[in-house]
Length: 142
Image (tube, rainbow, N blue to C red; front, side, top):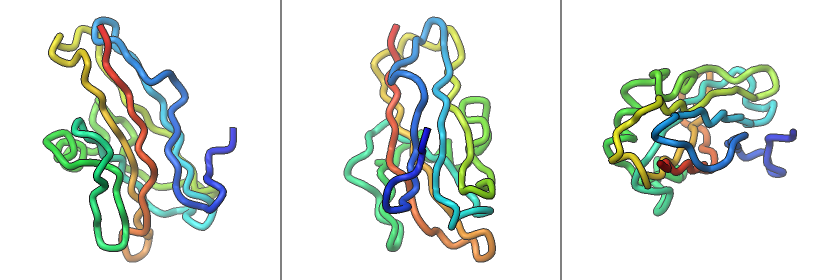
């Protein structure tokens, strides 16, 4: 599967359906594709429960997430049990793999929530923010 956009913009794809069960839990695997020009660069997956629009401008980069408490959690707790491999380095082809992992028996209050995730790419030398991917949703069902 080709996981890069035609113009080299970082893409985030999910290899499962857009829904997970709060009763049984589940995993939404992610494929990060930032093209070979980003080989070795760092990435950070962030999330939002408030949606993907309007996008958050960070300098010249537009991040397709509405900041909220979940964004703060994903920023302050990288590589948590909920988002393992959410912080790392892109491979020689500019790719990485991560996932959103919903544990079984989550509270009923999660039913109907939609988690959006996107990732940022940082230059490996300067740590400057270079770009952001698209956002991928997952909705929690019963």
